Image 1 (tube, rainbow over the protein chains, first blue to last red):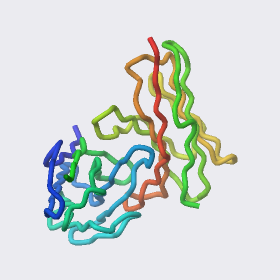
Image 2: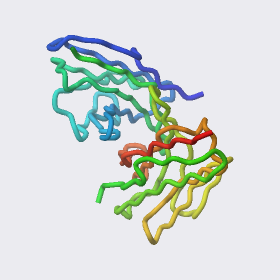
Image 3: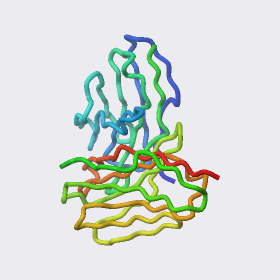
Image 4: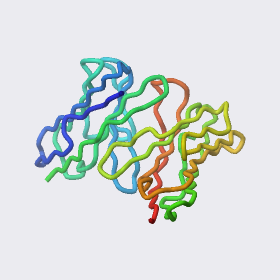
Length: 110
Length: 113
């Protein structure tokens, strides 16, 4: 059974904190993605990576960075969390066609 | 050209009825069209997908209809059940895993008992 796991289901952080969201996939996929999901705005792509140490900006990269040191792991970093980054964060990995999502991390920034 | 337009935004259906969600795209290079189902508080799960070389694909109560000339595809849920109540997303991408999926905005389906 294919699996994408995310380090936390729920996270509460304070404004200005550095936040790490981690994602691990066990499908040996080269392509991994980070999205945020907000009511009425659908799924918005933050960053994606098509290989180790490679990254590409998505539609809303501002305020975020990513790291991919190993093929199975893709991390999203909020350098200085702000309240407008309160959201549901979804990681995904993709083989040739099929893309699979993790369970999501609900991040609240106070 | 990168957009995928999904309608309706919300849909209420009685148990046993047919739920129909429609999507339209512009980019003729799109080659892969999946549908995702998302329950509250969970990540989207791949439900069913189609390639443009077929006009219909059926898996259980779920059917994708694809109209290449109209650049439209739709999800039909037959004999809708309360357990089908979820948000559904259509998506499209070009061929290959490094291509990004372009998602519709989602349809919130409610199936009343």
